[in-house]
Image (tube, rainbow, N blue to C red; front, side, top):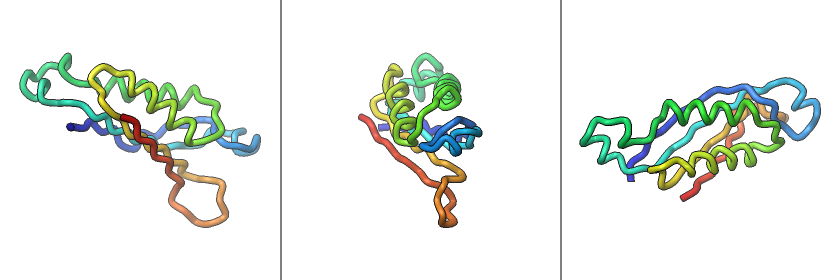
Amino acid sequence: MDTISIRNLRVATHIGVTEEERSEPQWVLVSVDLQTDLRPAAKSDDLEDTVNYHWATNEIAAIVRSSKCQLLEYLAGKIASQMSRIERVDGVTVEVAKESPPVEEDVGGIVVRIERT
């Protein structure tokens, strides 16, 4: 299976369990792998024969911006569900990371990864 990857899409959103955490927008990084058969597009050089990653990127950003969820898991699930509906997509992997998670230790981020086939 072939893959189209969208890496480190940085979008601000309100997310978190506590009101304090949700009071200001936070940056999340989203990476998505769309499993698809790229042979038709590789042969035809025609956008109609592939997954339009421009559209997918805009759709992911819109989902993140409009979300008012508490959990990264929920947000990742919403993205995976929407991307799974795209024609030609046979599977999807979504990673959502908080750049500044509310933990006491010094971490580079917290990442949730969801795979759907």
